[in-house]
Image (cartoon, rainbow, N blue to C red; front, side, top):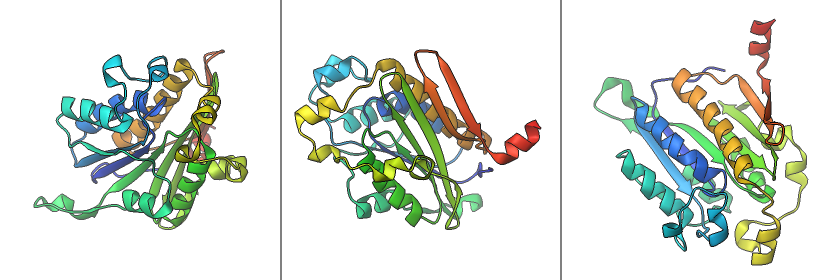
Length: 254
């Protein structure tokens, strides 16, 4: 599937913890390298805790600070980009739709005149209720790229859904894994400390692997204008990835 290489880009990322905090530095670097207007909005209502230092991309100096604020301020400053973050959990459809609504650019340069942003929604969340919310937003959107990452201690999957002109061109995680839409769990703000600790069976290796696969997908879309990967599953125990590619790519290989 082809994507334009000359339109403004906005990335909205839900979650700046295990996977999100590892993906963010590389995504800031990628956006910095692009010769077009870019925006990167990080969203997370969680604070850095001592246990996060084991597997998430934080340091002791970050303790008790909001995760989205820490990551956004640190890397946007390094690359001279605008700092944009939401220091609360995004848990309602209206808020999410507002975040992923593309802005229209009307720059003096003719090529940016009245051009809408290409929006990429990154789901770096650890609960299916948030994925269900992203699925609703995806199905309601005219155009949207939605890449979701999910992992446990040693395994995980990354799914790239594409919505174009009100049509689903590539299935999002809720369609690829229907159980996601049926699971009854809670938003982060609804969970107790004990529930949050129990629902966190992840590892540093799995988070880094998931972040790498997600960054690869975004890189291919923004740097090469093409996404041949629909979903990737991995195991850190076997150090193995398996990828589902698009039908057109399979035909080329044949």
